[in-house]
Image 1: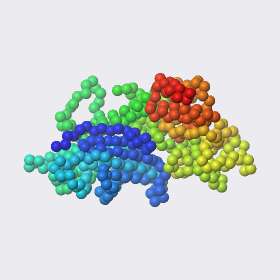
Image 2: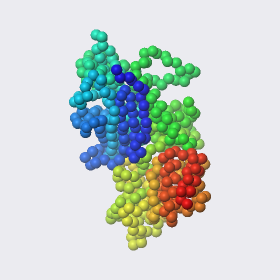
Image 3: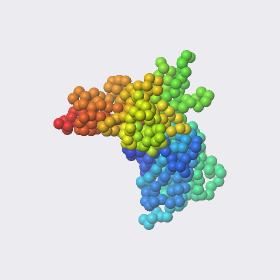
Image 4: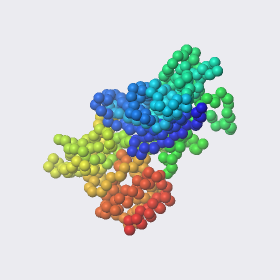
Length: 253
Length: 246
């Protein structure tokens, strides 16, 4: 059973890139670099918008159709939060390198042929958001993402946040959802057999993980609900990571 | 939490209305990092510290990054890549479209007596046109007065890359007190002879007779920027560099 640890992030790990981030959570470690807005190739130029180019490189091998699929999903959601209209005919280039993925304890060491793996999507998404913030690329809002799998355990169906590879293998359906900082749904991808009621439950679970409101300072910080035990508080993590970064940038004041 | 008068904001955050300066006489001026969403929303677009100036009725977000976006009025260091019929084509930052510098945009230049700049040479120039639809344009002479005011070719020396915020700190009118950058004054007090030109695009040109001096000044600036040195650490750095030069 893989242990879910708290997410960790480091910004500015690649000094030659405009912005970079290294993020690890639930066994996945991804490093992202962002360059932009820079000049775009003729074929990628759009007269009124910037082109957001995402490249995903797997931990081993050169990457094939699965990586292209992940790239197209990430591109369509990141284009919605970056202010692309401010930089016509430009390019914002995001390169994601997967460094570590959790091992599936139930599979022998032969390299498993990759099928669609949604469990890595939240890590890829979160790393690109952190790298975009580190580069100072103007954005409409920040975003957080999470994966939820519906697994049959002991005869009942339960939803598992941040599923392990074993969970993904035996799950009936796996879903990835991302929400902006304005609580809007940005990305919803699903795979497997599920009913509309199951999807609604997944939506509520993911919204609880991604959109937890920041506790207000009113005397004491109380842990109000015991239901908020599903996964880490991603928004709070994002905000505190960026606050540390800004504070260290402005150390001289 | 730290002072909420200068909160750290993320893109898309709501700014509390009491922080927005309200003056009935002057219009509100938005600096970098903020955008106006009609009718009355002001939204940050980068992660940084929100600063408001109630006297000038302006507000902006203080943040650090490495990719320069041209703004009219900025003093920058550009490198000439090639010469066209009427313009020099210059680069302000790598992988960006070229900026144009007119051949006659130098002090007292005519078609016969203009400076001939070779590809690779550096100029200290001012951005005159920069908008999202057009390539930027720069000049080496002030349009109104016809004087160069220190703009023009930078001969010899070497250019060092720094972050944009460090360049802004150096360009402050009182960089020692407000920007907390003392290395230049300290190196000058040690008797080193050099001159400096700071470009807002994150480039600092250091010129001098002695190569060792130029390299020492450049290293001092880069280390202060990259390691985030405070005033006391800068003093130790200067002492170490000067000792290494002897």
